Length: 248
Ligand code: ZN
Image (cartoon, rainbow, N blue to C red):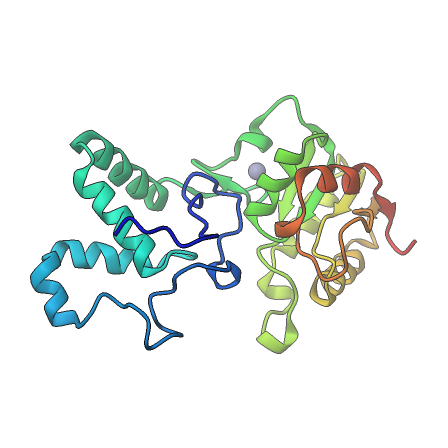
């Protein structure tokens, strides 16, 4: 029960920006799905007898989280079982608030509690610059990197025609509206260095070409094929500082 697989990543809950896609974590126990001979907690009916129904239900729920195998799920469940009531209540409240309070900023699409995010609401941000990103987590990454004091615009995805994601699925109309308001002078494209990221950058450029804004993109310090998820804060800060005119 206390066995910790070597190399097992256990920090996911306290590091929201961290990549926890367990598939690539060497040593992570995956609950036997890919290793039918491995430990899976035994026969389910027997397990219910030993674990009780509620504990088993919690282990199953935790085991669905990315990077959490059966063994880690068990360890977490037993931790919670033994934790004091206040700790469990705080977790319960945080989970509930996550689904009821955290939404999207009506202006930029970043995470927000209420109609506007903290960045859009801040009087200290430079409103002449918009940094265009794929998803809310990219905003968190770039903020952690530091050095950028403009606003953001979250597209909500990248163009992927093969997967049915066209321009109308992205938050492009609102971007055009924001960029054409007269206040914005520069739009910085901070998208993944992938074919989809490049295709999306072209679509944004096309959409904004009629408006008098300077279009730049992150310096190619990001390895080709990399999304922002894999860049460390230093790399992101450098990429932002060294940004280039689009097309150069
Ligand atoms: Zn916002």
